[in-house]
Length: 503
Image 1 (cartoon, one colour):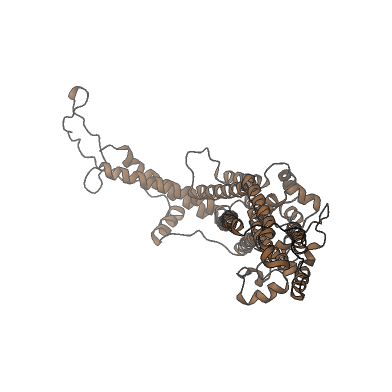
Image 2 (tube, one colour):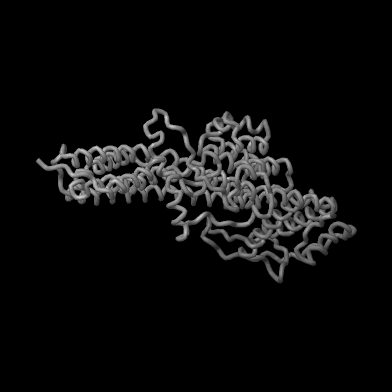
């Protein structure tokens, strides 16, 4: 029988050091109901990452672009000093404590001669390669989901910027519709953040700061209508679509204006973005893959003491603890960033997911800045006499002539060209087709190309007259609006005669 060996002083020192490092992990490791902890690190937000307390501020420092917090090679000392405060260490403490206790039992039984049968390290080495490949694939899959969510949020920010700018020009003539459109657009990022993290009703029960902010933006009536639907962000987009349709007469009309189509396209882009975010939230990595990796990793870590105790002795305990922390911590990182919408308290950075509260605050502030610019511009236009923009001096002279000039005598009728015989065609009965009287224009009758070009110019003239009357009339004088209407009607009637004469 093998004689037991007393542990040397360096072995006891290694065990004491490992216990000292793992002491925070033992606290509350086997509690039935673990205390709920936030995933956010205990650090203050950087500039540009707005905190909940200062979310209502509008200083110049909040508008400046600030990069996210990045790791520096000089941070390793602080990382080792704050090792016991690690978020991942707190989340894997139960698994880590179990492996350390099991390794301690196996090592003690072996050192005191009770457990003599051990195994070689070859099976654990082969299995370790497989475990490493599985962990790499699992972590990469989780990071792809995290990065895809960040790209979608970036596209959502760009769409909100475009809509805020287009609102200044496309909905300027209807203040009531523009106001509702702006309120829905400003509240959309906050509502999306609440919808993806815990839901709007739950935020209302918790009296979260985002709930109070959204209610102040939308108003009581619109907010109560929003919370009744299943997807609040889609409801806000629907209200924005109704505002656009009310401004341009709906989508059932024969002609859709370019601003109308652009606004609808941006709104459809936001609908697609919210649907993509919901897809990431509701479709996790298959559970069978996560379960198999967890079982495989637990069995492999449990077999390590039997392979190392014969060579390392009491050092098996800290070695297995370090290996367990490395492998299980990597697995937990994949589980944490798999769902990037974990911003529960609003102070989260990019450590364990997307800072949804900070991103939504940034988007909403930019929208609010555009709305304030519009309000200041409206007040400035009310203090000044805004004139209708004129394209050229010739159009200005034509408008003045139409409005102020007395009625001119009727112009003499254009001389009529005698009808010309058309060549005999292959029509019904082979009868020749004679052209009717044509007004003289540049020495002859217009051709088909000239008629097509004239029709195109007539359509453009009618559209321009209608646009001037609808958009510029509220800001111009009645005389200018009347001049714009007469110019468009005159152009359409002048070209209509050429369209009705076949060539």
